[in-house]
Each structure stands twice: as structure tokens, then as C-alpha cells.
Length: 404
Image 1 (spheres, helix red, strand yellow):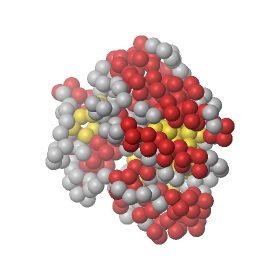
Image 2 (cartoon, rainbow, N blue to C red; image 1 turned 120 degrees about the horizontal axis):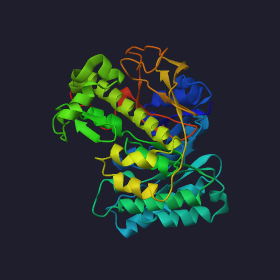
Image 3 (cartoon, helix red, strand yellow; image 1 turned 30 degrees about the vertical axis):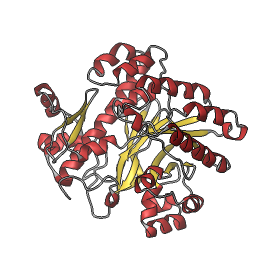
């Protein structure tokens, strides 16, 4: 069966004193109603606190970790570099993050490195220190700013080369990448043999009136103000009319085009479905050793295609997965996607107006006032998987366009 896990952000608990107190008193598993064999990952909230311009409450985070008892948690604070920083600022981020790694090399704290001009410094510092190199789990951050094509960002091809080097050096460590779990970047994480990745992209797109198409990227289907993007072609509209995702089957194109929370839910469900289908396609083609013959047609419109081609030319891993879907109303019951091979991956959906009926025997859910958590995104290669969860009341990127 394999282990299963779900990722939560500490920043959410930090904002809600009562929720934090209850989680520490009861433990995260009991507080969230998650059974013990479902592993809970905790993000340290560094990006959230960085955006606020304040310092991470390190002592509060450590207290929360020891009392709430998540199964996976990074060092309390890392200092995320952005491409526009000067060499001096980049060096300062490296030194401060490594100081945090050293300070919390004990116990089960997960070490963090950043994709930046200082990545080699990280790999040397982590690999040459016996206590740090002995850690079984590491995480890589700082990737998203470098994928935004800033003139001073690390070139994309260099990103791939860097990640390949990290994977080769830390061959015995479990590697997690923050923010690299979209429909196209899933190809990258799988081919690079990264163990886990998370992303909120599919959910953010839904809030902006954007849906995702398999292998083709994002398309704008709802006019929600200032957000603009490529609209579907006539052929793509026809494909959407035939989409078999739960949202499209129940509400059709009108559901995708709708505003307010109703439209957001439908687009989010559609985007998650596309993400799941993309994982299935990747694993199926890798298992059948046909990926190298089909990926170019699959990703014909993706600007990540040259990067994926770069990886395929040098390495070609193969792995298989299975998926299960949990009803947000009952963590104790799951429905397997029986058409996914080999290993179990579980996804948690907690804030849908229905539980997608994806296979025979699926349990139907319903939208109710007692629902508090919403999925934000996540993926795990091999034995594990997760969705990053945010409380519905605490949407971290501002109000959903169109209102509630």
C-alpha cells in the first residue's frame, strides 16, 4: 500500500491561535481527523512570513512541531533568495539558511537548500558535514522565482543540470521540491527522480478564471477582471465539451465559465483532474517504455519541452503509481483509481461541492458549512503523494475573484 501524506502550512496555524492551541493539545492527526497511517507534512511558512516582511517565529514553530507532532517538517526558518538579489544578499541568504540547517541538524528536521547561484555552496556544505549528510530527507526551494524568466534568473537549462547534480550527489536522500508540481513540471520532477513536489498553480489558475489542458498549458475561460491569457481555440473548446472530469460532466462549459465560488470550484476540480490524468499518462508511458516517443507531441505547446528533451536525452527513469481518492467527509474511506498501476498514491480533497465520482464505488460528498480545508496542490513520485491544504477562510493570495 505504501505510506500516505498531506502537507499543511504552519503559517495558517500561526494566524489562528485557537486552531494552533487545539492542534498542539490534540496532535495534528487527531485535530485534523486524519488516521495515523496518513503522514502529515508541515511547511515552515517561510515564504508567507517573508512576504509580510517580518521574521519567522522560530520558537513558536519549534513548540508547535514538538507538540502537534507532524511526520515531516523542515528547519524552522530558511531565507529564500530571489534572482534580483545582489551577490552579497545571495550570500547572506545562504549563510543564514545554513546556520538554520546546522542549528537544527538534530532530530527529524528536514534540511533546506535553495536553487540559486549558491546551490553549489549548499551541496558542498551539506555533503562535507557528516551530521548533515547523514540526514535522510532534504528539500529544495527557490525554484519558482527562477522559472518566471527574469533576466537575472538562473537559465532553465542550468536549473535542470543543477537538479540532476543534486539528485546524483544525494542519491540516498529523499528530495522534496517546493513549488514544482504543475502539469508540465510534473514531467520534470518524474524524469529527474525527485521524490516529492508541491504546487498551488492549479488552484491559483482556477481563482483567476484559468483552466488547464493536458500537455497544452493554461487557457482563460472566465473573464474575472484584470487576469488575461490565451483563450481556447475552437478545437480546444470541442475537447472541453467532451471532458470527462467530474465538474465538466456535471456542469459543462457553463460551470467552467462561471464566476464566484461556484466557478472556482469547477475550474479547480477540472484542473486537479487534468493534473491526475497527466500523472497517469506519464507513469503509463514510462512503464511501457514509450514516453520518449510521445512526450514531444504531448507537450507541443509547452515552453518546458526543451528542458524535458534535455533530460530524456540523458536519463530515462521508470516508475508506476496508483491513486486513491478520499472523501473530504470521511478520511477512513478511500476509492482507488483501479486503472493506475503498481503503487498507491492518495489525494485528499476537502473543499469540493461534491467528491469527484472517478471510479466505480466512489462515495459522493456534499458541500457543507462544516468544511474548513481546501486543497492547494501536491505530488509524490513512487510510494507517496499529498495535497497542500489551506483553510478555506485563509486564502493566502487574496480574495477569490468574483466574491463568495
